[in-house]
Image 1 (spheres, one colour):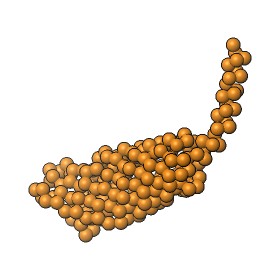
Image 2 (cartoon, rainbow, N blue to C red):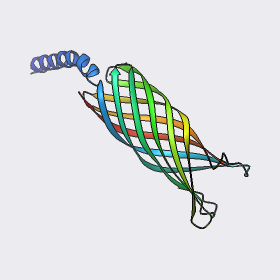
Image 3 (cartoon, helix red, strand yellow):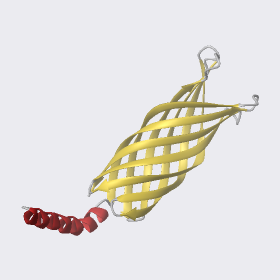
Image 4 (tube, rainbow, N blue to C red):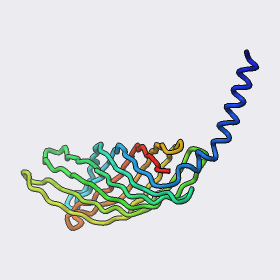
Length: 188
């Protein structure tokens, strides 16, 4: 019985080893994904001396192309959620962003470690003073890093992204930090 188990284990190991190069290279191509986000807004207002940290959960949608093992080009829609000041002022911030970035990837078998550099086109809505709303938008540099795993077409990744927004004529400055868990599917 132990001999049969040893033979089956050896054949399974050889089969997996033979498939490993294929699995590692099979994730190149167009991919789509969705993810859940946790966003922290570090808000500073020019007229106030202190910063306020707000947070919210939301989602992101991913579309990308990985032409090479070490490079991917990606666009994301990130709903960064909304956050409310807990100081009794009823001021809320609702922010979303479209991003375009390059991912520089180091591949270790089925594990990818990556750095992300790009630009974020953000749009913030501020609800102030008894329901009045003010909007602002702009472009800012985006930086990030993450780790992912892939098994052929299916992948999962955990990533950190950061960019700043300067709203209302630089009166409100947000340092936005997002952690996301995403799942992707690559069209081979």
